[in-house]
Length: 231
Image (cartoon, rainbow, N blue to C red; front, top):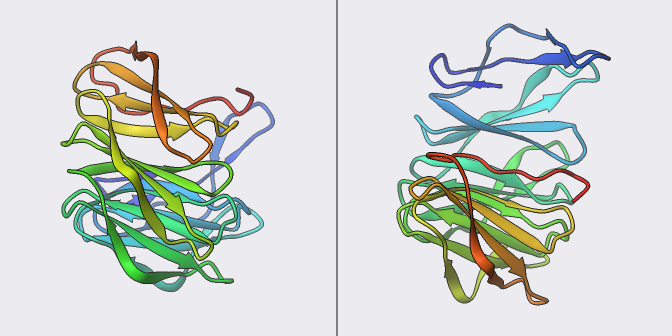
């Protein structure tokens, strides 16, 4: 769990009944204002987005679940990173940069360390808050909070993102979170400004098409969306 105010990560073991018990170093240090954490598909590495100093902290996960810094401990992102997504193969990572309207793209080494691709970033819409990769690892989608759009990309064999045509599709007001369902058929975006979810189908080429109806009602200021693994 990221603790934005203290620049740290809290770690827990999950008991048989679901209760949490602290493990590892109490208040493991991260960067400035950590706001998002992701774990790779192998459960061997964790990555924390530090919005306050434009970095990602990199960790190995021990057999007991505790985190240990790896590589240079942090790697530079673009301005104001907001979230990170790991592709299903565990070979590539993508970080949204809210402050300069880009996604940073990285290769993940055998030891879990991130290395910038060439090019290191690709353009997005305005204020990209969240990114999600589909289960096939072929497509990525970014919620552009200030642009009211979703950017859509194909993922090449080397992990690089290429904008689709069109590069964006319309969402609701201020999309802030996005997820791809486990079947790889649908995408949902939480629209913070309009209190709705935008609902899309994924075409054979990865391009998004609005469902009918295009939105579902949510509560006030929705900030996060996910699906079950059995959808």
